[in-house]
Image 1: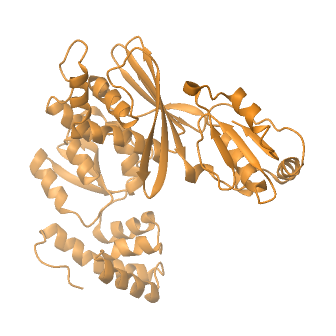
Image 2 (image 1 turned 120 degrees about the vertical axis):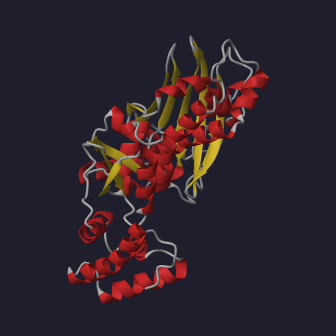
Image 3 (image 1 turned 90 degrees about the vertical axis):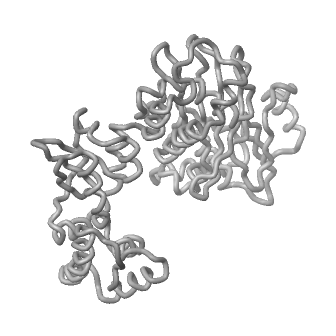
Length: 405
């Protein structure tokens, strides 16, 4: 197998190690000859490394593969689930370097820095760290998810972006007094602010949060995610407070709101594409004592449009609920706290009964997801289209099923 030219001595060791790893995988019966041929074929067509091809095909878990790599390359595996990084270790490497290389320092003792990586074959990075820090390097292997969680826990979501913004005296740094609308517009359009806001929203989506709460205080900007109905503090660097005005202005621009208006509540909507999925974000802005507070409701169609059987009801509950929604008359109330699954349950019920023989109408504020075969009416207070007016109107529309949500 040809690994090409230009390797450092460490990379050559890793390249030779890949041959041993392949033999070990076959010897341990973790991989069959047929699977190896399939991985090599993928390697040749997509330009992947063999270990990457094996993972992509799902023949082994990342942990299994790292265990074999560690055995061959004499690099120990680290369990990062309970690792706490002290401040001296955390400051050994620049934040931007950690995010870019996707590795993390985990210990510092007697002139040796322990560094965990998920890529056993990018060992030249340890030469870079040795030159950067002047310390001896002890490499460890850990899964990508473990490293990502540790980075977020200790450096925060968007930590590299914040670090860069602070280092370059980014938007709103060092400013005092209220900014003009022109200043706010300029700050909100800076690349670093755009990236930071995107990272905050994408992280919430990855954590399956239903809401993002951005709350300004006198000396702090709090960001919390509501996950499974419970608010959890997002791991963000404390310096994010310096960029409060820029962050809020960026969100207001995305939601097509007036950034110059900071005295009255405003509501808007943002559309995102994340991993091929269409994400709608409903934005509510309210003036508070130390700035504007924002709550963003994340409406992920993929996480809401379930069938009844996918809701996870036990068999007796499912039979009872299915019998109730199939009845021609009656009323069903779905109640619960934010993020408990009310909308998910109602939409699953509608999807279960909708058909050519039923006229189904809804009045919603707002219409969160579009359902095929359902006539959905959005509430619009500005023009007087209230729940009461909508309900009176649809009762004259010959409905079979009505949902008020």
